[in-house]
Each structure stands twice: as C-alpha cells, then as structure tokens.
Image: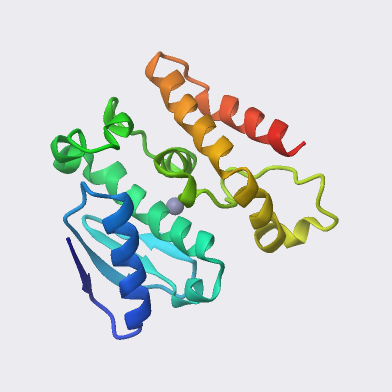
Length: 184
Ligand SMILES: [Zn+2]
C-alpha cells in the first residue's frame, strides 16, 4: 500500500497516520494520493485523491482516524468497482454486498460500520446530546460519549447497512433514530 504525498504542506507525521489507518482498516486499498486542504478537516477530491488538513493531528486520535477513514470511504464510494473484488476477500466484505450509495450520510454509516475505532461525532449525522451542558462542545466533549458507545454505534451502522440490503429505503432515518435514542 502506498501513500503518495502531493503537497509540501503535509507533514511526515500525517503521512504516517494515513498509512497506519489505511493499512489497518482498508486492506482493499492499494494506494492514495494525499493533498493538503485548509478549509475543512478533509476532502475527497476525485479518483484516488484525498486532501487532509494537518490540524487533525492536534485532535483526539479518534477524530484523526475518523477523518482519514471518512475521506477514504468517499474514495470507495466512487471507486468501488475497482476495489470490490479485492475487498470481498477481506474481513470487510460485508460492506460490499451491495452497491455503496453516494452521499455524506451514507459515507458516515459505511465508515462507522467498518470498525468501532472509526466512530466519532459527525456533522452529517448529528445527535442531540442532551446530557451535555453546552452543545457547542459537540466535537470536544461529545467525543467521550462516542468513545464509550463506539461498539454500539458500530453495530447499529452494520445493521442499517443490512436493512438497506433488504430493501429498507429509509435506513439513514432508522440509524439516526437509533443513534438519538442511545444519546437521549
Ligand atoms: Zn465527506
């Protein structure tokens, strides 16, 4: 697996973390081209190109891992036909039993379903953290809630994917309801 750094603004440490995440959780991916972005934590560009903001190195590991995994999952949304046959031979074959849908919410569900380590708060699948005193602390305080419940959220995401496979169209709504009931 190769990570080819395409910008001088990507520190070595970030390159190493990306390698680690892809090696550990994305055995079907042979390589990515890594670019810089300063406008978001991460961005999927196109083809095999992803962009990351080095600021994620200063965030909790779970957010760093989730951001990398989210962008690589976007890559898979667009390149799935090229990685499917390899993916079906891995422990992640359950993510490929149907055509993976496009979109941010689907991207998060497929990321959560891959591994509990990749579960972190998401702007796209936001929950009402009623137990938190200040909802503005979402990403910093919410992370502890996600940490404690990462296995549960991972299992829910796997179940949502199964439901979609069986023809349930509103699997995202189902997932959000379940997620909110965990936090409620
Ligand atoms: Zn995204």
